[in-house]
Structures are given as structure tokens and as C-alpha cells.
Amino acid sequence: MKRFTLFTFLYLALGVCLTAIALEYPNLTSSLQTSLLINAGASYIVCILSTFLFWREATIRIYRRRNSVVILPWLVIGLKIVLMIWDAQSQNWTIEAFLRAFSELLIVLMFAEIIVITWRVKSEH
Image 1 (tube, rainbow, N blue to C red):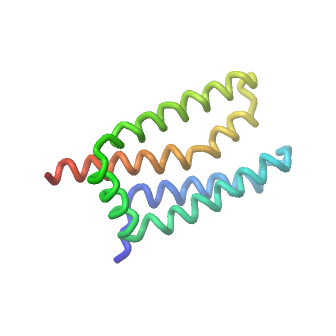
Image 2 (cartoon, rainbow, N blue to C red):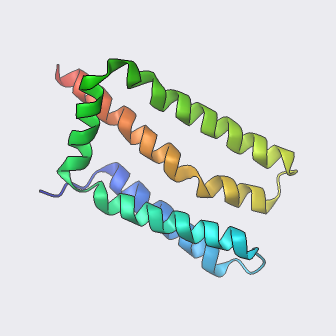
């Protein structure tokens, strides 16, 4: 059975935004445009996969096997945000630095979904 969650729509919105930026922004370098389009495609794939039940079940299985993994998503999200801010600041807050950071939001969204799923599993028990 397919399930649509808030994260399904967030993945879709991220993919649409990245595609629109990559196709409509006139002065992007080809490598940045390629990166944006690849991340948009990955976001669309994750959007489709997140509708299937195995996506949630795999997360729950990993959570139940290793309770020590609970802190890992928090660490990844925190490190990713710090690195995105560091990169933008080191390049004097240019639009290219913001777009590069924006294209990496898929990782943050995926780990945020893992956190939400594990919270729901904890509340069920």
C-alpha cells in the first residue's frame, strides 16, 4: 500500500525547486547546474520510494536492531547544516554557495524523516 507523508511532499517540493532553479537561473556554471539537476532527480526518486511501506519498515528494522544508531541522524543533520553555513560564509555568501548548500538539503530531509519515524516507533511502545 502506498502512503503519502509530509516528507513525500517535502521531497517533491525540493525536487521541483531544484529543477526550477537549475533550468531558469541564467548565469549558473554547468557543474552547479548539473549538481542541481542530479539532486533534483535523486529527490524525485526518494519521493517515490518514500510512498512504499518498505521504506518505513527498513528504518524501523534498523532502529530496533541497533538502538545506538538513534544519535546518528542528529549528528549528520547538525554536521551538514554547520558545513553548509561554513561553505556559504567562506565564499562570502554568494548565490552559488547558497545554491550548493540548497542542493544538499535532501540529506537533511532524509535523516529528519528517520528521526520522525523513530519517534513514532518509541511512542507506540
